[in-house]
Image (cartoon, rainbow, N blue to C red; front, side, top):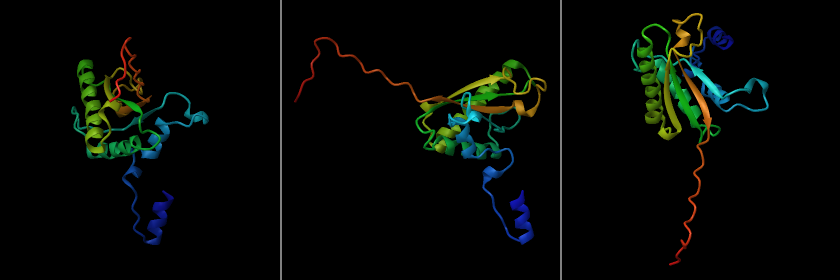
Length: 177
C-alpha cells in the first residue's frame, strides 16, 4: 500500500506482478507452504496450501484469475525445493446443491487444475493426483455456502516411492559380450 501511495505522490507509473493481485498467492508463499522449513514452529504440520482457484459457476472451466493463480503454483512446483515431489490436488465445493453433484464437480475441477499444470507448465502428470471432496471438508462449516469453502488444496506427498530392485533368479548369470 505504501509503495502505491508513494508512486502516486511522485507521479510515477508503478507496475506490480500478477501475484500481487488480491487473492492470488505468489510462488514463494506456495513454496514455503509446501516445503516448510522444519526448524520454524510456524511450519509444523502437513505441508499444504489452500488456493483460491476460481471457476465459472457450475463449471470446471478456469477463470482468468484461476489461471494466474495456477501459473504461480506451476512456477512453485518447478522450483528447486519442490522438484521431484508428488502432490495431491484436492477440489472442494460449498454446500449449495446436491452432495453427489458437488462431489462430481469438485473432481472435475481438481482434474482441470491438474490438466492445466501438465499442459501449461510441463509438470509430470505422474507427480500429480487429483481428488474431489465435494462438500465433505468445509473450511467454514458454520457458513456452508460461503465462498471460502470453494477452493483447491494442494498437499505435498513427498518423493515418489523407490522401486525395489528385482532379485536375480537362482542360476541366472550375467553374460559378458
